[in-house]
Image (cartoon, rainbow, N blue to C red; front, top):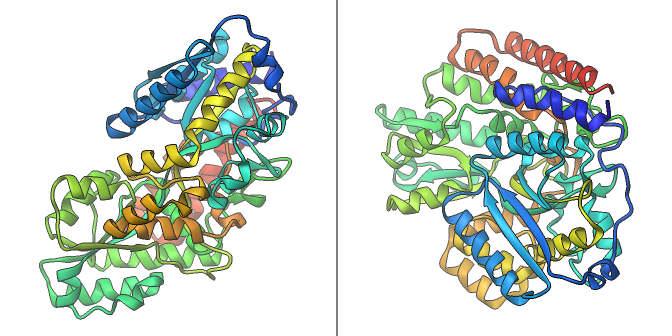
Amino acid sequence: MPVRLRLAGAILAAVATMVTACGGPAAQSTESTSAPGPAALSAATAPVSVTLWHGMGGAAGEALQAEIDAFNAANRGKIEVKASFQGSYADAIAKYTSAIRDTSTPSVMVSNDITTGFLRDAGQTVPAAAMAAANPDDLDLDQLRPAARNYYTAQGQLLAVPLATSMPLLYVNDGLLDRADVDRSTLGTLDGVAAAARKVSSASPDVKGIVQPMDGWWFEQLTAASGALYCTPANGREAGGATASSLTGEPQRRAIATMAKLYTDGVALDTGVDGNAAVKAFSAGKVAMMFNSSGAIGGLNQIGMKGYSVLPLPLSGDRATSGALIGGAAMWVSRVGHTDAEQVASWKLVSHLASAAVQERFAKATGYAPINTAVDTSSSWQAFLKDNPRSAVLAKQFAETPSVPATSGCLSGAMSGIRAVVVPEMQQAFSGAKPLDDALTAAQNAATAKINDYRKQAGQ
């Protein structure tokens, strides 16, 4: 059975139980690095149909459709794009996996960050780097934000083009910090944030110092912010891919221990894995600081919260070798079962959605950070940032995040599976039910076992 079908079968079964098997690399996810050029589209004798699947609802989905409508209008008679909302990102990747088996994948797949490893392994797409090289008059990859390119790159090759990018931020209740006499300049490091949380707890016994969603992304963020790798070797970015989980290194352990101690000491608030629950607690004044995605800005603004600021994610490692991980989604151009003309038309759409003008409009409508650096020179964007200082913090952090191994994140075909075993162990450690070192070791062993199981199922 071909590798891609073995992968599809293994992943589809796992998605059905919401615990995706963890994985290393396929032999090569993109079996061919060649790509069709403009002549393929020019030779088309009828309008080329392009299908796009995505998992973006709400404002993001509406903004995406508006830009697709604009693209269709500009390419009437040549290209027609039909976008289809597939439910949650988990629903979308499950349907995509079924489509692999049925040879009915969409022309363009918009999928979230942690599916990158699986989409690489599945062998259905043509690398973004190859499409850009074959179509030099379209998207200039050098304009993509380095931190975003870093995440979607393996073995030096860009696999997909980011569309919507979020980052973690530190949210602070200005009044509560002022009451505790917290110096904002100390909040650039994790130790400084921990000290501030304790000051708040002492000054206002009815208020907790900090909250973070207890989901896997945040343990990955603590790892990247310490300058450590989440999986080995090389965060799965080199030939051979990830073969083991890495959760017990000293910088990483120290960072996680700093947060865990706040919880076991009663200084932090446990709202579980739901990021929205953390937002509700923060907006209600129950907690003075919050780690959350930049997407929470929209939620807080929607409910009308005043008197809060956002700050960059605090680091525990050296600023040259550590930083925040991106989140969000990227665009993959399908190769298997799709004509050359369709691939080029798909790349035209990807280039449009990644362009500076579209990224500026999309960012304003959704709160995501624009991935095209050409936006930085836009006077309208600079005016927007002046009027929206919270978005300015996000944009600055995105621009300044170094492209280093730690901030690339773990590239594995089963990141959701890794999260499924790491989070329960961390919950036990943060509640005090289990010693942190025992929890980290157990999580590392379980995650590594899932990696090995995935590799075996995929025939790697």
